[in-house]
View 1 (tube, rainbow, N blue to C red):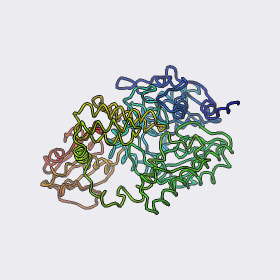
View 2: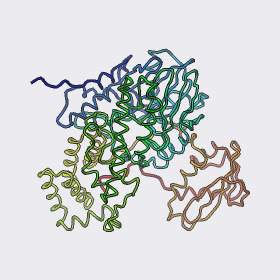
View 3: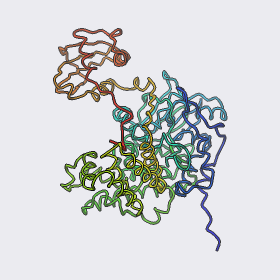
View 4: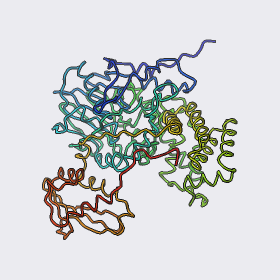
Length: 599
């Protein structure tokens, strides 16, 4: 019998239009070390390994393909030099950069690769499709901090960029080290990719605020001679996101709303839960608005799809998958099933399940279903026994006591692992470690189980979480490197800067403190009232004159300097300047290296 032919369409599309590769594929970091190493994934050119499911190996081979590619006349992409793609659209007087990657270094290298092959074109505009760091963090690699070129983004971009990357930034970064596998080796026993792309770069990231907001579907903009028609898609892959059509080039950009993987309804690093119902509807709207005018669809990750019939089929599959996930989860939720119960047995329609672009390499049916449940009903499953459970370490101590101590628990861990029940073995092993984090055999047993779970996982982010957990059970927690550009703070509003203070007040320490500060900003004309009251730092814009303990007149830059140095050299202050010292003495410092697999 002749074997069925292997479908190579994705590989052909991933290599179509190749102009040049970056050789060598190593991009140095500004602060020393390496920002990105595309060559470290060369091992994926082999035939596979027992430690990686064949389907994940295939996806990782595709995401590791890197270089400068022509999408269509005048539209180019640099792929495989970061977790995301940079798109470059040639304009009358230069080039428009869409989604400038994670880091300054990788964005500069991507632009350099483009210029080396297409000419030294000036950047005439920057477009952010949405406020995730891999779509704006490298902006200072393509324009200067004081640039006058337009920076275009969906409305509410800054609100959500700061919410994710500053307010919850420390926790998300630490959790992100797990799902990205950032500290793991690149080999068949370690990181093979992230499903959405190879891996995120580790250079300097920055942010420049948008100068032009896109506010409505159908909004047209002429950007240096290139016509754009935008589609707003809030609440899909990001709280603020947009697609766009290039009508004169018959090219449709779907941002991160349609990629060659099942995406996350709630990413494992943490985020706001996304709306899979609206996600499906916005894809449907994109098909309705743009499909008849497009010959190619491309996105901020993965490779394009060419041909009208092919792109409609691809978008329809993505549309139907998010609708099915949503509707079937809600239907079963209304029959009394909990999120974990629904997720345990959730088959897709066979025609959807057969598509590579619906496989769970980055998102997964399991955690997407639980996220949809969470969006509607939250963490509580309505069983009163689960309403007031002990936190993990207290639970662990009691379970281990029931089993007769840590040694007896570890024996049971090995017993369940030997029987093939790795899921319960991992749960029991985690109890053993939390009950006694110094117990070497418990940590060893759990690490081995997490490794086995990783090697069987088709989902790249699950694999990375399992392997990082195993790594941290065996090794000290590596320091999480965070290198934000100073421009990140400059891009924030006054309210957002004050939020960085209020979010770090140690409540108990501030209970007995009470003071007020009036702020007057000479560069913007804004006035703010700040009060420390009952342990909460309250701040708000005001048009009233307030009597305060401290009255400060300064610029926004002066505020940044005051926050950074504590010096009043460049500000005018009236009243009790010790109030500022009292405030800063109440602030906590977040820990980017907090424990996860141990208490």
